[in-house]
Length: 428
Image 1 (spheres, rainbow, N blue to C red):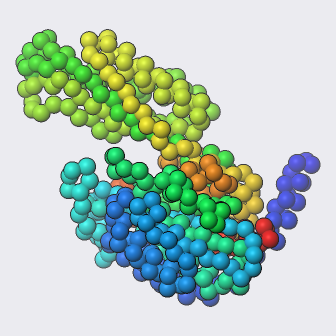
Image 2 (cartoon, rainbow, N blue to C red):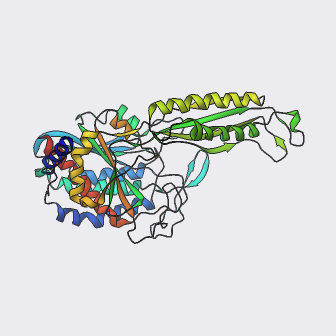
Image 3 (tube, rainbow, N blue to C red):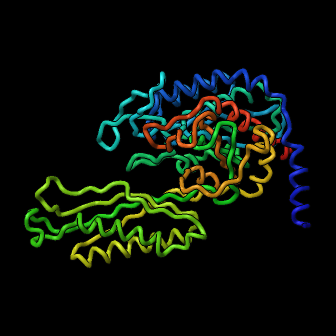
């Protein structure tokens, strides 16, 4: 009972900072611009580390607001620094800006028709994860805050980050490179906030989780070496495709039979299988490429060790050879518990307490986690689903039919604006 009372008193004391800063008119005035920016970005998407025109538009907007701007951070990133009229701490707000190699199927007036090259192939390009909305929300937030420097007790750093979806092979990029290049320094950032639009969460709602909120993500490659033979004489060779199928099957047993899934979720997905050139040749080699998602580092080590052991052992059983490469990947997105608790009243103030939901961890991943390894950070989900849509009328992220309702963008601006101001107010 004492613990519950203490928690209630804590939130009561914090609620004084979840105040109305009188920005309603400015936020309402910028809404049409935010929608226009979002649609422009959606119609003109760019792949990771290739966000050249996107960066130019962002930088031009920030400069027009009198914000100090740095470009070319982590290749195409843009950073803006807005100093308030009063001294105080430094808070960062982050938006990711890259699109995906996905061909859009939506029938929208601002549908993407952009084509580009990805891994040597021509692909469609689409903001199939909502980064266009993140850009627009942040541009709107910057405009509102730049007009209200008298309400800022400290400094706000706007981080427009490229390559959240991962840099092309052989390149560095994303949040990890931004941190490496000093984005959290000069001025030194004390805390950072980020949001992600959700096609599954209705407009007007916000979801959050303290602690481990999104999974660590690792890319793996399994290379299998067999012995080439005529397709009509499999006994004359060693079939690497057959061996690959056994490894895929074995990997799922790690998840279903070896991990304590009541502790945390985990996923192994093979996203690509390649091998062979024609129907009547058993090839010499095959390759599996996939992703590992974990929410616990001990479980991650267990998965990594068993994947290597299992691939090598299965291959050997069929007289083949297998090697496994597992990249370090993206860490767990860990929401600082104190910062989350302190920021919750701000979200409840702008969305209504009944519309802010505590959720379980998500097996999706976010390289926002690289910032959180250095400083306290809070990452939350903003509703983007049409409120009039049925339960089955939304499409997952990273798909050709992914769609976001523009009416949710204004709440994104409100949330980011108030959460930044409230943080600086608490710290003064």
